[in-house]
Image (cartoon, rainbow, N blue to C red; front, side):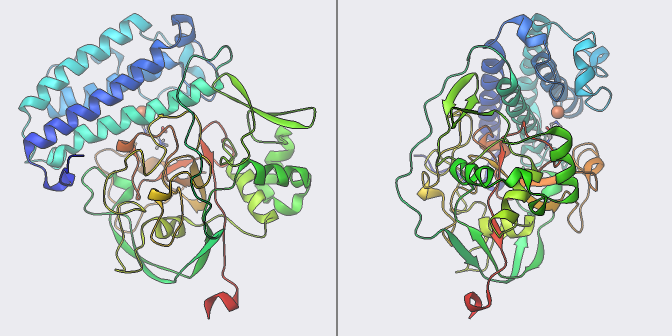
Length: 446
Ligand code: AVJ
Ligand code: FE
């Protein structure tokens, strides 16, 4: 294994090599996800929640063109005429199939032409002088953007009807049973967010101190078996466990189980990327809304963690009082640490990544499933939009809950201990699960 210095200490040559590597990896994945289906499938809308896959593909290229060809590279536009079509704020996802989009052939040619120019820009751009260029931030932002859309495309694949087209090895099994089901996280100050992580996005900044009261958090995410027990206990029919908005949503939609679940002769099955599977009891539950997560937690006598609690569980090192980059330390994730990057097409069971545990013993905070928190998506004190308002600013204060930690479908480049995701509390198509927390009992504080 080669030891590479942190991004902030790399030479321009090392940064350029790293950028080329992450851009290549993201393009291999978007190519694989779009080559896996035929053209008819690429232009079709598999769900009104999602864009046609061919829209994501050209949108990836258009963002890359805007930031790296035109802004950083100061080159002539490749296709200025299509900016409007691929502006996510101009057209709802539901309306995108009826737009005069680039065909699959045109979209592939377009993103290739943009990428060729970008690799040339990468060779020549100074990696200093502008905040956008420092530590190659703009390149890192574009690579993260492509990987965010590959996860979106993976969610589209999960919604797609028809035969399975994606394959991957099954996730690892648990090698250890966690020592305890819960851990106590001590109260006191904690540094949340970052001012030093070079590729952190605007909403993760700046680092700031928060006071977090002592709390107890589950070592593992809620599993399919745990969640099935909630269903069997009548959890979906008991308004006591649901918030007013959650209960209204449950009544309006008639939901009685996570998305993609069906019960056949008393046995639960779920469909994963076109393959019906008997429910794996020890894997984290996935495809539940914030409302379902909150109802489960209430039924279990617990609650969801706040965003600050989640991040303290993930980053706080009681030995030093400092915040780590990841639960296991400051090293970038490896396949031993976490289930990331679509290496597998499912979350791994609780206990499968002991090397990824936090100092306090909390497991699998990174990877497997995005974890709903109880927090609204709001700016940190001192937030400044960068480099554009539409990444974060326009979403603050909306009807969004924060999710943390990344899923099996999140690439390493788009996953950090500080990374913040958000979605509407009713959404279930994302790879979201949750873990529970609670206030400590008096005798636990002693
Ligand atoms: C951070 C995942 C909520 O996909 O809507 C992609 C990321 N922003 N293109 C999204 C994003 C612009 C964003 N999320
Ligand atoms: Fe986008």
